[in-house]
Figure 1 (tube, each protein chain N blue to C red):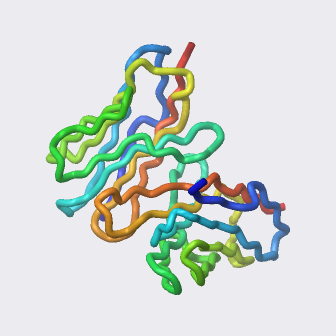
Figure 2 (cartoon, rainbow over the protein chains, first blue to last red):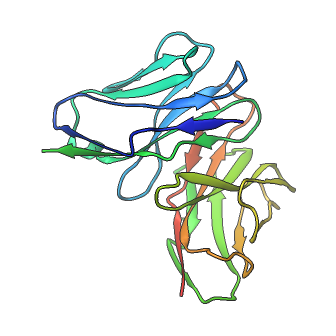
Length: 113
Length: 114
């Protein structure tokens, strides 16, 4: 079965500090793609970052980076220099071969001024 | 602008009525998806479609129906058979056959049953 687990329902961080959101997944496939999406209070789902499983180098997008550990099936998101606009729900997701995406239950992040 | 539109933003339904949620995309994406979002449960897949005139059930298809007559459009009908339809509904699309494999989302429709 394909599953995604986000074990931190809620987190908070002080503005300008760094925070890491955890995600683990389970799949028997070797090739897949991993994503982090952000859902602010507007509820629009926004792509934050993506990672191809066959690439060993961790993806980075400005203040956002991932720590991808394929053997451990772990895909954590690090947000550096946290800003008030980072306050949102964050969802980890992946797609193995095929067409179905699998999502975690989300982590609610609050950035404290 | 390219993107995914969903309408209406808010929808109210009386019990026993069918309602249809619209989803349109001009991104030339092949695959389209419908998700339901409830508090604390993340996104659950209702239906998805890879090509015109073809679609597959997701994890929670009971009480829902879809059609895919055009590449750009993937409407979702919530039927009276859906026992608890009050939720936030998200439509998404993806271009298949590329290594990016990224799904993009519309703004969502909030459905409330009165």
